[in-house]
Image 1 (spheres, rainbow, N blue to C red):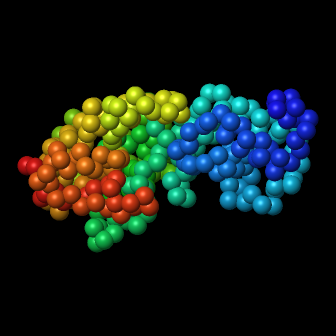
Image 2 (cartoon, rainbow, N blue to C red):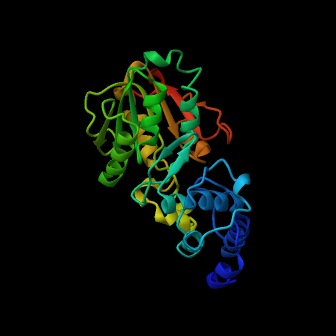
Image 3 (cartoon, rainbow, N blue to C red):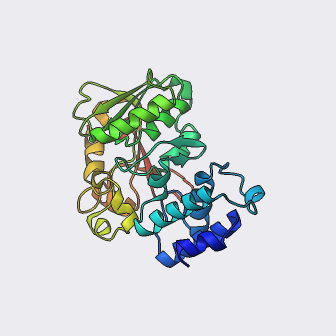
Length: 299
């Protein structure tokens, strides 16, 4: 069915959802930037485009659409299929739990398991969230984890660091949206290079961690994301090594390090067999995020 035929024959939200799912499946889209199937993605893009509540589909399924609404839906479906843009870049928003963040192609689409852990204030590893006075979010991207850390630890000042000036610009917008400018400092830095003498009660990081073979095989949707935010050397651990080898000098004596490393647990444990990694439980399992105490890190 062509878009012209769709406009003449489809009438309701239900009709357009069915059409979107059929197009997405026929186009062989890859999902992984907020949804993992064609139905969820079609529902999200449809409700967002129509300015309807994202958690309220049923009452609107049989609502008839105006001409400009039909055009808007067909346009966003077409861009998703033809340009293979992740949905977050089409809508300029990404969600971590109940928190919305502005995103565009200057930053990776947020999808960190650390966000889940921050919702629980890193319990039981952080006994008193109010006692966390300083935190660092390394490789902050859109600033989402820095913002969630500031919300989780009300007394903490947070440094949000990224190598990319473009990412810092996006993070500035999100920090302003959450009115956290007085507590979050945005710093352009290559890892710890501009943090001389700074120490933190908590360091969190979702660094680039895709290995070279996986980068070469990424679906088209991922190729719209900044290259710097994805790959990290042959085994995906180049930046993680820097964090482990330099982290201790930037932590307080009782400080904690929390890092996400994707599917690299086996490679990481082989590279650092003497480190007592604590693997944290997330919705996807306990293989993706590790915790270390400052005293466990190399001096």
